[in-house]
Length: 272
Image (cartoon, rainbow, N blue to C red; front, side, top):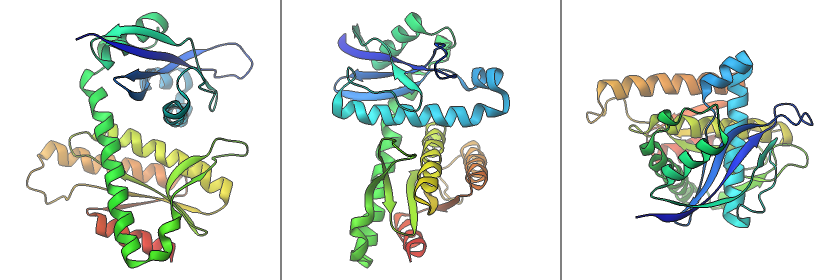
């Protein structure tokens, strides 16, 4: 059944003040749930910007995530520019799904996104990955506070990524360290990796701004889990190695755990 969708293209200006704009993504409000989507593909960024593409991809993903969070509070119409990304005209249309609203945005505004590559199922995966991240953080928080009640005020604190920037919520910030939490979902690994990369980008900015160490604690599948297929296991190992490499390059640490109890123990070790 067709429903009302509200959406806006999100433009990126590679050179500030040049007037050149590229449609980087879109933010969609459908069935009272707001989601952000990067629509410019990774291979396009690599073709245009070469070795700088990975950093630009992280920047765009992070800015879209921040704008999504702002939109949940202030709506699409009042959405400010974030890290060089700015909203375009806000549209209201009829769509049978969130995916269809995205197709409308691509048809109207983007020449750098292949509509056939948009995966309808991926749109439903993002809330699942986000919910898994939140559940993992909640379980780690409950376990940590049961052992160290004095840490209760350190969870879900905010910090800018740079001077004058909008505050970003982190899983844990103490005087010693900044920690984000993530989950590598065994059947939604691509979305999980994108989420982890965005968190690493946020950690890098906040760590530099605050001047403290930073770490990502990530829940991963057990390698002896009989329910995982060989392909899933190989992908998980490859993705963990990739995220660890990116963390090392940013002078951060990645800690992989298989349970929330292990996650809490790792947090306590880092906070002490």
